[in-house]
Length: 391
Ligand SMILES: *Cc1c(COP(=O)(O)O)cnc(C)c1O
Image (cartoon, rainbow, N blue to C red; front, side, top):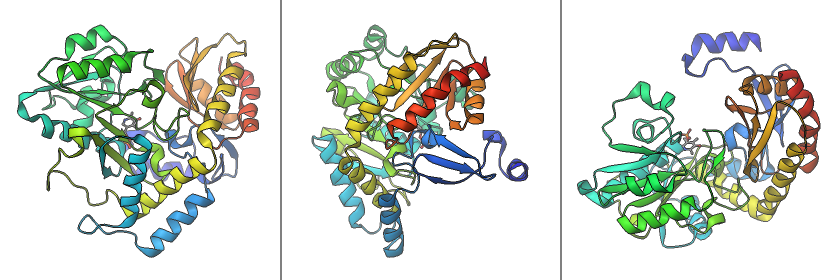
């Protein structure tokens, strides 16, 4: 592993730093490093590996598709793409259309272009939230409220106005008839799994209706069963004009989607946007296998049940470093009393658990949706020792 880390450092750009582990393989919710040590994977490649590792349905779907037809470009249509679009529209309801991408940031770029195309130049600005994360390409980055990520790359061509996440008053003041769109995450993932206050999304919906701005919900991390419904906005019964998806959708294969409703379904005309790889047959086959498996295995109910068990068990632990737990379903932050998340992540790794120090006082858990109650229990049992080792 040390040799591989040295070669990584010499050959790859230093933007990620050198990760602490080199993973060799995975099975279910377990992964092994190149030295043969096993870990329980409680982060799932950042909310991506929803079926865990090596799930037979995913392996079968991807293997069969790559052997049949791996790529067409958008010069030709193919059935997996049409099936997946139909499937997503069925889960989302309403009068929508889909554009496929390869990643989350590209889904937000598509959404940004889509709202601009619909409103034209008259609506001059968009609104996004402080501490938000929408991606690393220049358009999505301009929407990203996390200053440490955005600011080194400004100025941006886009007029983006930031508001405090959760403040209805600030949102109402910021959104006028000149505003093209409001971009929001239903829960801010990269900020530390911070759910919107009750009623905030409904208020955003009402403000957008009053002013004619589009409500764009970035469900790239929250979507595809993560919170116990197919999409998080379904908990509140709020309908977006545009939704973006990625992360869990392909179960590990790269795919994203931008779905527009009503006038946003057909705002792109021929030639307005495109992607050579977007909607690739293999990625679409993977996504279809993910959606079918979530349904067939009853994973939405499972996520709710196991996620609640996890939160209750963590809350029952009495430890000076533990301040609480937030989030929903199998998307949680263990909140710390001190900014010691990096030490907790390292101590968890030493104990055989992969978690993520998403913010100084928040440790993120986003395990595969198939995780078993006894696997969750093994982590909760080890947690006091992990917190002790980190203190
Ligand atoms: C991860 C993420 C993105 C960016 O997705 P990439 O695939 O890394 O480009 C955008 N928005 C949210 C909410 C995310 O969690």
